[in-house]
Length: 76
Image (cartoon, rainbow, N blue to C red; front, side, top):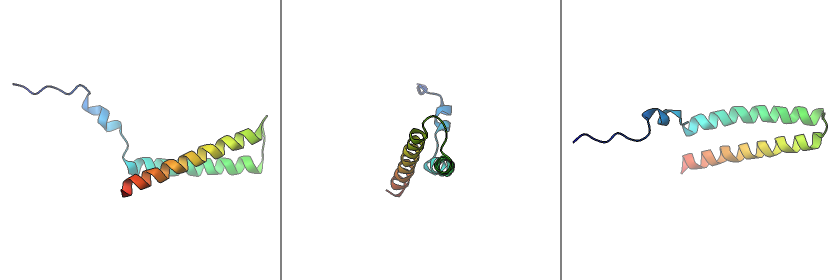
């Protein structure tokens, strides 16, 4: 009797990032967001600069937390 094919094609697994790759991408993005935040803080502009700065800060915190979580799961 032939083995049953899996429901999902094998290529789906190839789209997944390793923890190292995800961490590297986060590191790159964190650098860019820090630079953006510094620019916003140095020269606030737009209709609501405080909201823009707050949003970028929250994004940065979330990205840094995700990065720490990746490191913690890699160690454990």
